[in-house]
Length: 427
Image 1: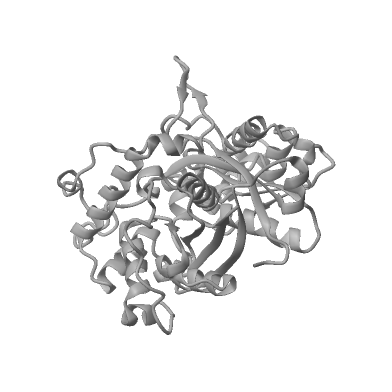
Image 2 (image 1 turned 45 degrees about the vertical axis):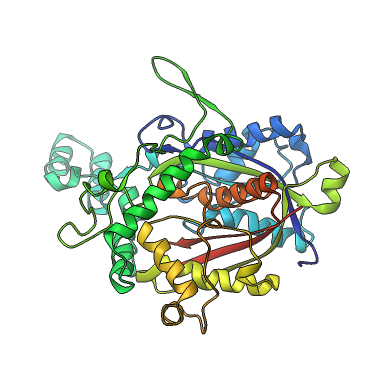
């Protein structure tokens, strides 16, 4: 047990909605502000109690540098209280929580507003550097002749935009995209298309079954251009998902030989999560019974081409710091970046040869099906990359409270070849 454990007083999130759909008109600032304001309203805790705000965000908007500061001020946190934004790709929301743990241990604050936000709908279209140079020359041109020469330097390809979201989901070292890393794991660990689709169906049906429980986490939003409607649920959940329907989908990353499809991958999503965390002593002063406490956390590195295996060593490290075994854990939340990825992780946890491939000397143990993502995962709920790490923590703690269970382990893979994990204990 950490000498200065961070306790999670409460948390709330927006609905998670497919990019380009219901929440597409809300930028990452407004998504984060809505989650934070909703959390303050639900708990009745004064924003002035916050010592520091820490949010994760992968694609920070250009007009909101240090987005955490903007969210804090718009949510009513006093201007005298600092804010910082953290970025660890898919683990950014988790990084916000664990950074607060480290700051608490260092005596640099006692109450923290933490979380993550992402508007994947509003990730921008970019011009190539060569085109930007031409635009700059055109803007500086003086006289009709100079302007004409600058304008005629443009070529059609200069007006073809680069997709920031596509660039962000491509590893610059391995030079393959995230879906291709999943295809690599599917081949190396012999994970069939049928197994991947079965995992995806499981996620969808569990999320549909637990919609009311998931709704407890959500602060509804109002959206619509012509007709305003209340958005109360994650809109990527498919109640009619089946192996037969998924089998009709074509592989999208390796069309000829691949097995990873849109149906067995996490969804590109908009959403935000806000969490109030503090010391146990401060929670008592505020009269709040926390959801739980952070027992330990860990981040580890792995091969960028096999970034999906990151949770294996991160979970091992976090369990080691907590003094737990895998068998001590009641609920395990592992982000479903891809069905192939999570199935590879599960294989590495139980199979000695696979465990060695992932960097372990021995397997940690087998995960029971009832323990894993009991309310579905990112294949159904979506994966707003800056927010998911915080969502995993919030979802796990809500489940511990609802079921009366004691311990949870959450983990996720991280683009670039990392893994993050947190051990949680119900209060």
